[in-house]
Length: 159
Length: 76
Image (cartoon, rainbow over the protein chains, first blue to last red):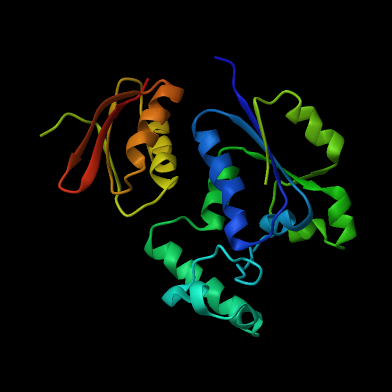
């Protein structure tokens, strides 16, 4: 049985958008897929040794908030300093209580399953990030490297 | 007692953890052995069917028991 391949581009650096790449990559690996994730722009935050990402209610009208605040709380209020941290903390607590894995846990499963993780060299340079900021095993490369794998993939997803 | 070689309690865990834990448990078992899985995530029912179909492991049993979902999976 030849292995199926999944290629993912991860571009977002928020708590909520950190999940899809790691959930799908870890699950695909468990199903026997050969998986590669190309992290670019804000997605690079997901490769930092300590993942420090937040979720913001600002500009995010679909985000359910406690006490149905998403229905009545003024949009401008979501810009109040500290709002983002509070919402992030609440979201993390909610996830924990519902048995949702942490991003770190899913990332570890990906690492154990040998999911290939590539950091976009151009964005690393652009944001003055250092290779030492990232977890071990991360490779650095560009668009051509992504296509080498994506071109032979059965599924390609942009997130 | 039911016939199984190893048990995995994935109660309280949400997608995709039951699948990931099951995969890990199966990796440490030998062919023909049976894994007994307990989960509370309703999504696990369809997920384990799909997992079995795609990995070739046999889903011998899938049932609801006292509000929990119980599976027997034979490693291929």
